[in-house]
Image (tube, rainbow over all chains, first blue to last red):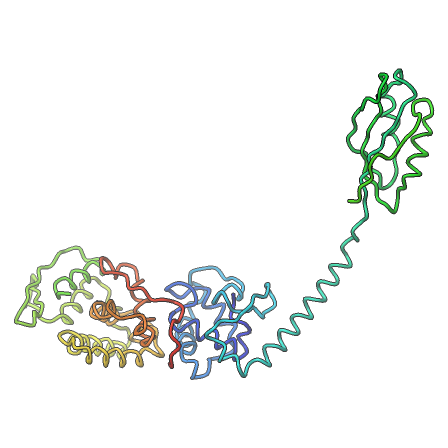
Length: 226
Length: 174
């Protein structure tokens, strides 16, 4: 929305076209909307933009009452035709190829593109800075570990507790379950998520098998990159 | 629209309660109002102005001397040029004149809503209703003015709402 830059001829042209079939910017009575646009225009529009000029002179007539006009002031870009590119820099850009205006844009193209260029560069700079601030996407993997006890007498609850007691930066334990292997022996299948840079499977294996009383061996059953 | 009907609409718009009785005179059906304490009033513009004063809305007749004159001018226009002239040629000329007149004005007097706007609205309604979209685009200023006036609270009443398309359908010279 918006009229583009009202200080340029292109912007005034938009205003003129908009006002061709309207008496006011919004609705059917003068309101703060008219005041916002009136103040954005630097002076009376040229005589050939006679709709804009008519509106301008009319609103000027209400200048003394401007505080008492109804409505609330909104940003300039909120008024005007929906398909005009907002070059005031306060909103997202939308494509503004309105069929009627193709001819009128002819000589104003240069000015428009300079503005558009400036705007684009501004946007790029904003994007870059945002990007650098954002933390880099961390490489993570999801592991499924099989921890096997010595025999069926082993206290699996304790075993799980031991495994879960292993803490490391970048290691998050997930859900677990007991899977029977045969002869009454159950192995512990436990999931964990690790950050590749920080935690390696060797380290995990070492730490888990350190619980010699409970753990006979450990295997990586599944390794998925997230 | 018959004069009596129009005057009733006007009464409603002005907030007048009393239903005046209007009679018609002559083959042109000129409205006559018999007042309680005075002579009878003849003529649409005369009666309309009288009603406005009765309703205490004299600002509708214009505030400055020039404005008052302009209002009178358009009331006269309404009665002489619009009523009774309905050939296609006449209508077209009228709309063309009105279109160029309204180019730099929001209301007929410029900046204020007056009886001139009201009576022109009622007078032109039957013509505007029949215009094609192309014609409405051609008389862009009239369309804008008409669309604006018909939104004035209380004015349209039972009259049909004329639709004006916002997007220009026809590329034309203006």
